[in-house]
Amino acid sequence: MSYSVDTIDLSMRSPENGRRLTANIYYVDGVTDATGATRPLSIGQLVMAICLERAAKLESDIISLMNTMNNTTATLEALSEIETKIVDWAGSQTSTATYNLSSHTISSGQYKGKTYKDFLTMSDVGLSLPGNQVVIWGTPSSSQLSYDEFISRLEAKMDEKNSFSQQKMIELQSLTAKRDQSYDMISNILKSFNTVLIGNVNNM
View 1: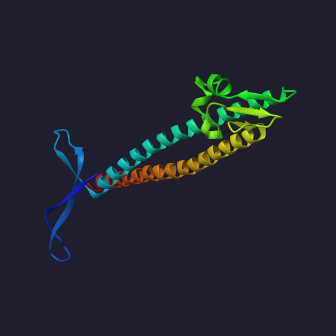
View 2: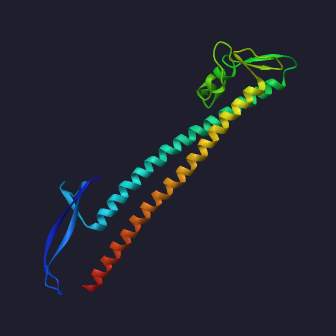
């Protein structure tokens, strides 16, 4: 927000020293009157305009941050579901077995209208084509992972997302507090305007 200041002569003199009285008026880009002309503002109105712009910017940042947090929550839920399916699969095996992530869980698994690969890529767990297999009770090749190693890497990914989510929650609390401060200041200015107006009416 950019603004300019102008000084006007009030055509009055100070009763104390006889000096001519002046006052500052402010102009803010985009703040106009009914005719479209830039509207002169008092210092109180200027502060209120600045606070309103700040609050609007903070509201936008809060919405963006909440969307990020919602996406992170969805990813955590999907990763948890992937882990549950792999654990259930491993528990049903009675001998050495491999589970192909690219053709099963990651590609075909669904979570809230998306496939699991939208939440977890092969590189997230250290796998690369053409293997993409988790091996239980067997010795994995160079393109495979042992079951324990896969679960360990998957949980590390979940911990990373949890940490990110906690960090964003702190940011959200900070932004919300700043937004509330802006609205409180606007409320206090409006109360001051009202007090002055009532005082002027009572003096008439």
